[in-house]
Length: 556
Image (cartoon, rainbow, N blue to C red; front, top):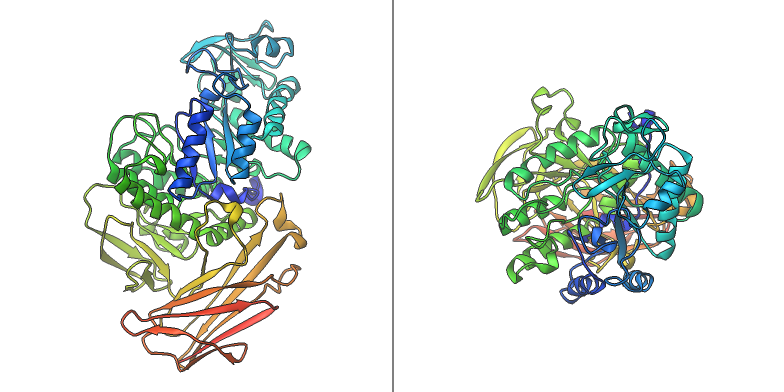
């Protein structure tokens, strides 16, 4: 399907990090104090999202200003530059609605940027935010005017774009666009909006990967880099319960980055258990973005001490998984495979799995069971028959092809790893600008004899289309072979591509379920030290890959 409608370009690597986001930050001081709070508490964060207060002090009457309110945000260029120096990107909300009371109204009229009535006059109507017109993204004048706004903001230092209300939220039937009546083009408005932004970046900022957060699109919107979310979901258990199915469905429709406002958006329901469960699910989501109305703090750094400490562990795990998650983004960009995958991807012939959404695969090798009800102490999980699976936290083994009751703790959701496969992890960093491609730790769960091969993707995280140019990326192949006598783990350049030799990699390898102490471990034939714990059956050793091929042999 994505071969037909288009593949999603790689997002910037920082998009896989943690966001600070709420409705909304009302001043430069609020923005800077929020990021300072993350830094003080050593909670990783890569971006802050500014809702509509950046262009006006009131919710109503200011939409369409699309320029900084200098009283509350003086020197916005300096603010964004200071944030960028800390490794934090600034994402700004924009809407296609231009109120008749906004600073840009007359300009859009003069430049013929707006949709019209049949008689050619700018179309106006009332909705929640005020009396409004809408940018006609189907005609050159509308696209040119809108892109000029974005170009100015990007040049000021904006790192990402949030396009809101692009359904469009209110689009009366009598409105006319260059492509037809409102009812005829309603469903492709958001699609064309994303297109004009994507094409603008390609033309004017060809060295930047866009971040385009939008809640409305169409078939093929993924090819413009659209990152959708599920809208203003209720901050309730019911709000959480629907999110897995929404994301899985959208992933199969090409939009692999569907996600939700972690913690829930709407309402004043206060429940730290719900918040933590939502964030624990969010770790294994395409985008990790807590967001909410002001009634209850959305940011991890704004929580009470106990909740913050627990939520911080979810954020840290998100960053530890960055090399694995970035490889999922690469797979999506080259094959169309969603990052979140239904269980029937493992067992296509098993019809009973075709309606299962409460358990899913995160990439190929994680099996995830979110907890979506309060007070849960155990739950049932089906383990795909294609492998045996190990609990990521307790290291308990579960046999594939069977259901099992698993214990549930408040610290994490049930998370399982495919046996006999190698997974890359990394150290926690304050933000992704500090992430190093060469600092990799690997884990694997040993389960008798087995063979597997995995390829991991690396680049600089910013260059557009890096995966299509051999000199701009690298592919590390990890081959696993276990028999009665030994386990051999080999790292090498992926010889099926023209990618140059892999750069240096070093770190720790941890193998679980190693029942007997190895006789020895060698790297390229030379013995190396290791640690083995009889009680936990855990084996650890250091590796250093700095040539075209590295072979590690564990002699049983």
